[in-house]
Length: 204
Image 1 (tube, rainbow, N blue to C red):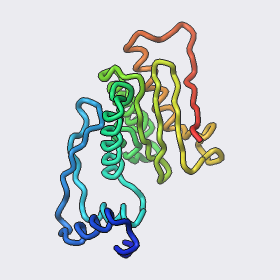
Image 2: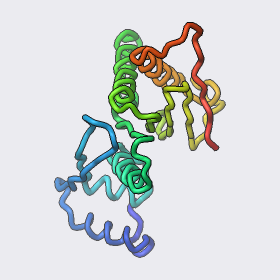
Image 3: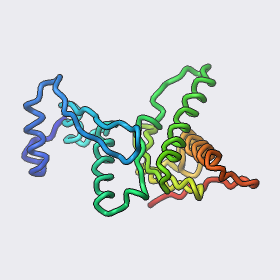
Image 4: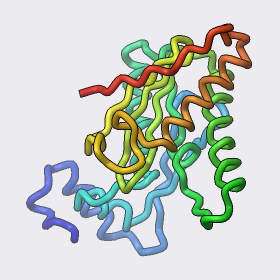
């Protein structure tokens, strides 16, 4: 349900007015820059996505990508562009669904996502990458420091006790990023004789 325009802040009232005049097929072309070469440079936001935002419903990739682009623009203003890059959420979230017997396909899909993260880290030569991972119907923010094998994460739902999680991190996300860090360190010839486990630090 879309809230009444008068209950919205002035800027969102203008957005509501604009979206109300859009046809169901019409879309807004939004330029995207998240600081990673080869990433999506444009996304399209339709009337339905705008009303989802105004109603504070579940956010999709288009909303997150737009926010990331604004966030990266802010980093440019603050002179932090060489410290961070942002990963496309659709490249790392488990969007594909597999049957119970398709274990190999599921593992290969996860490996493809890990390679995407490792490739982005390697290409950019940046210290840290920020990513948003979609799991169990909500988003989790991760900041990856591959040089020190540290992942800072923030889960708004605090899933410490949920099935399939370990120390608040779901197994898919943990395996995905830890594999990506190993691939990155192997490419950089950083792997040490003694394996150092990745540290997961929860941001309050």
